Image (cartoon, rainbow, N blue to C red; front, top):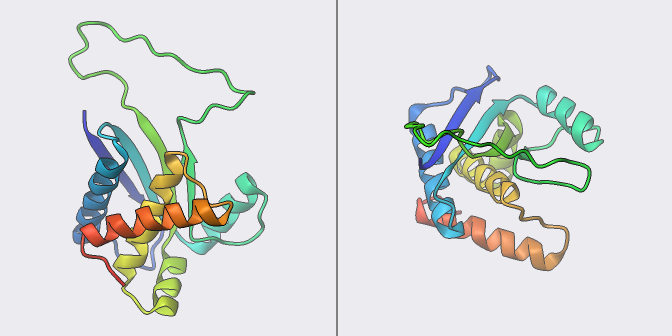
Length: 165
């Protein structure tokens, strides 16, 4: 298996082009290489502000829209049981994919932010995607040091695919 992107478009205001998906796949590969992640699946869903607002309220208790949400599948808290899969030796498909998690991006919010920051929608979507990916791997930005680390990693990946400010 390799690092794979599965995506879904649940919003109707902006077209999601094949070129954008190819760019996001390149970002995923570069970010995976930088973090030593070579196998797994990332599920990406494009939504509108209303959908992300509902998810933000339901899962984070924050009653407003946001730009990106990440739901890591490999996090285990003290209250959860670890699920262990046993695969048959002759399973030629490689078994159950290692789903790293879900990233949900509000395209209208990304569009607004791209205009505010004066860069392309592609750059903003790329930024939000790599930001979400790093969250799936356990990175956070609760203090200045962790935010600086995360920002540095994001900008390095985006520079590798030509999405500079």
